[in-house]
Structures are given as structure tokens and as C-alpha cells.
Image 1 (cartoon, rainbow, N blue to C red):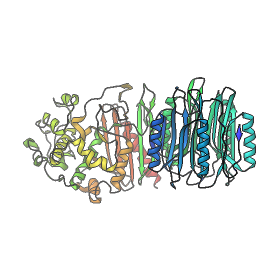
Image 2 (cartoon, rainbow, N blue to C red; image 1 turned 120 degrees about the vertical axis):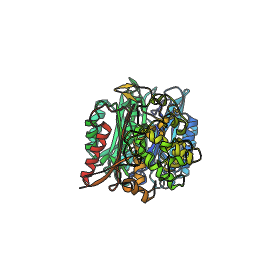
Image 3 (tube, rainbow, N blue to C red; image 1 turned 30 degrees about the horizontal axis):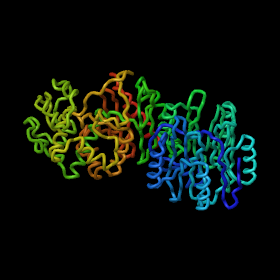
Image 4 (cartoon, rainbow, N blue to C red; image 1 turned 30 degrees about the vertical axis):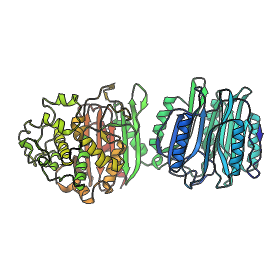
Length: 639
């Protein structure tokens, strides 16, 4: 063991026996968040909210690309992981926004001499070490290290190859010198478990604890005690069934979470769940255990969602109303801010994949409300006029539809039939490139008996396909799926809202079910705007929130949606009021889908609930019941 006091911050490192570090696994996604604990407790290093990214199980080349990409776009690596459990090097890390654009260096594969040289150069350049991993590759000791510019002047000593007794001695000495630990690693060597620690100055005099070589029971006891004393965990490691970690005073009282001994599936499920709940990952590691490789992670509150006052009541509402539905996803936005998002149950029962807000689900007839918005947006873009007849743009449309306008078709006043015609089985089994290709299969069918075009409200999915065919013609032949993407979704960043294409494997879809049995997908391309879309509840609430903010349609057209026609069903929305508050809503139900979109226009509230099973007959569908109850709770909270 070598440990050299900081002095002018010039540090010495020792290269020693071969060993294996603790680290990482599975590649995960990007979300909003911040960092591990690189040292300074401040708004820069422990912000209330920040953008972040996490990567796992990357090759050296992939990880180098990750680092270049992230640092080049204003991110900083704050937690580094390296392991060779599979025989080759795998790397991972956590990045968060680099608020002051400080310099950083990441070196994931260094031999002993290379590490000593790089550390000396980093020290001379005014960088401090924030993470050190030690691992064996091909029988040779290697190091992975990350340094950041020491803007605060906090750099302290670091040490590795410490025995447990030496760790205790180092802890006592550094505490006496007014420092605290920010990185802790335990790793096996032929001579037994060894430890590495990185220290920084502690000018804020934060209370801290450092433990190693604890049994599982003692670890749990101490961790609970530290949490009760107002400390939060910032580091963890485990070797041979023994545990250790770092805990630091949680001075700003923001919430945090810590997990250990997770399987890969448990880790992935909890990763997505915690992102939904409004946390950011600040540490992730893997280690060998009796049952195989296990995962640990530490999380920090990254939004106000963890403390939203209605979180508990909403959780209870969904638990009570979800019934036997395999999986449900919920998103709630209030005044432009996401206050709640979460999945319940499973997106994949057989694979034990929990539902989360990033799973893509079928909108079913909620697509009709999207169609209404698209109609008015296309009018604002000069593609069509809502009062124009569709026949004026679509040659060949039968005479019975020649006086029907876009507004009437997308408001169920075209007297077009609904399901039950002879062509429906063919439509559901065939893929269509355009709405125009599908429309002739039913456009000659008789109008609904006793229905007056422009007057009678007669529900029809098929009418939306006729409107879509007209939009295609008005745009010069652009397929409606592309029209939706180009004119609405891409400009607004709605990355999951699109026509369902089951052959696209890149989409992170939920499975779909009848009862609790997975079923194949039927073809929806014939009814893109009537019930053929897919998305996440997050993108539905984003669309609704941006609509209310005037970012989708002009203010006049936003108001026209709710009150312009005077109809109870207008542009895909059911229009009404609740306790004196205007509301607009749309439900949807089809194979593998139960969806509900609810907007309170004057209150800035947007709620989306989507499930992966068609609701059973009788009573209110679970998605609608859940959304309505959340809406009631939110209105009540307004006073």
C-alpha cells in the first residue's frame, strides 16, 4: 500500500498484484438526471435537477465513443465502472451536465506505469481523481480512472491496495485532516480483499461514514442507522459476500435510493422504475456473489416527482382500479411540468419486464384526437381547409361523401359506417401503404341509416380513414403516416407517436394481451388516424401540454377545439365539464389496448393512461376509470 498526502496535490500511486474490479452490465437509456459524488456538494455537483445518461457493458471502442459524444455535447463522466467478468473488458459510467464546462480526462485501460504517468500529468494540469477502478485483464493489472478539473481546489490523496486495517487507519487519519471519501472500491487479490479510496477536502464539514468488510446483516443495520441520522449513500462495493460503502450528510434533504444484490433483470426493472419516479442514477456497479454476478445502484432525486403530494393517492388509485390488466402506464402533466409518470404491472409477463413510461403501447381510438389536432395543424400549414370537402382533394370519392368536410369526418358527422362490414376482416389482415389504398374497400358502403351528414353524431373509425386519404391527396400524395411524422411529431419531438409498424424491431413495445395471454398484432395501417397509432403516455401528455401552451396550434384553433363547433364530440375529443372545469377526453379500446387521454384546458392538466389489454366488457374501462379518478383528485387539490 502507498498513500501520499496531497501536499501540492501531487499524488503517488502503486501498481501491484493482479485483481478484478467491481463494475457494470446492461446498456441502458438516456433520461433527465445528475452525478455520482465527484466531490463538491454544491448546485454544480448535486443539483436539484439535471440531464444525465447511463451506459453499461460497453466495449472499449463503444465506451470511447460514448465519452467523446457526451463530453462533446456538454456532459461530464462522474461514475466509472470496469469489469472483466466475461473474460474481456466491459465499461460503463454515468454522465451528467457539465455546468461550468470544466475539463475532464477518462482513461479506461492503463497499465501500472501508464497509470502513474497519467496521474502525474493530471495532477500537473490541475485535475483531481474522481473514480478509480482496478482490474485484471489477461493476467495483467490494469486501471480505469477519471479526472476532472479541480475548480474548487478540493483534491486530496488517493490510495489503493489497502488491507482492511490500513483502510481503518486511513479513515482515521483523513478524518483528522478534515477530508472525506468520494470513491470506494473493494477488489479480490491473491492476498485477500483490498481497498481503494479517493479523498477530498471537506470545507463544509459534512458528516460522513466509511465502512468495509461488513456482513449482509451488519451492512443493513448500519445503512439503516446512517439513513436515520440524515446521511445518504454515495458509494458501494462488495467482495466475497462482504459489503462496504460511503455515506455523506444529506444536507439539502432531497430523497435518495440504494439497492444491492440485484439480478440483471431486477436492476433493469428498477432502473426504469426509478427514472419514472423522478430519480437519477449516481452510482452503478457489479460484483460476484454466490448466485452469480449481482448489481448495485444508488439514486438521487432529480425532480419534484418523488415528493408530489398526490403521488401516494395516485399510486393507490391505479393499484385499486387496474384489476387483472397485465400492464398499465400513466403520465400526468400540470402546467407544463411532469408531476407523475409510472408503469404498473408488466410489459412482458413471460420475460418479467415491468411496465414503464418508455414502453410503447397502442393508442386505439385515442388516435382520433390526434387526427383532430393534425387536421387543424395542416390547415395552419396551408395544406387543407377544415371546411373544404374531402372530395375536393380526393378524386374518386363516391358521391355519398362528396359534401362531407374534413371537420365533419374527424368529428364523427360523416355518417360513415363503423365496424361490421364485409371488408373489415381483409382490412385487419392487410398492410396498406396509404389510407387511399385502404379506403376503396369500404367507401361505397351505405351511409348509416337515419343519419344526416354534418348534423348527426355517428361514431366511425372508417370515417377517419376517408379524412386521411383526403389529407394525403391534399399534400401531394404523402402517405398519412409520413404526413403525421413530418408535420406534427418530428417538429414537436414526439419520438414515439407514429403509425404502428410491427416489423420495426427498434421500437420498445409492450407485448399485447387478451386476458393474460400474449396475442399477435393485427394490422392497423388501414386506420392510421382512426386507431392505428402507437406511442407512450409521456408523448401524449407532452402533446397535450404543448397544445395548451400554443406550441402546436394557434391560440384561436386551440380554443376552437374545445368550443368552436358547439358539438359534444369535436375533432376527436368528447367535450364536457366537471365541477365547473372544462374537460376534453378520448378513450380507445382494441386488441391489446385500453387507452384514455384527458385534458382540462383551463387548468393545464393533461393525463394519459395506456394499458396492454383490451378492457373486458361491462363497466368503465380501467384506463378511463384511472384517468377520471386522477383528474378528480387533481381538481380537488386546486381548491
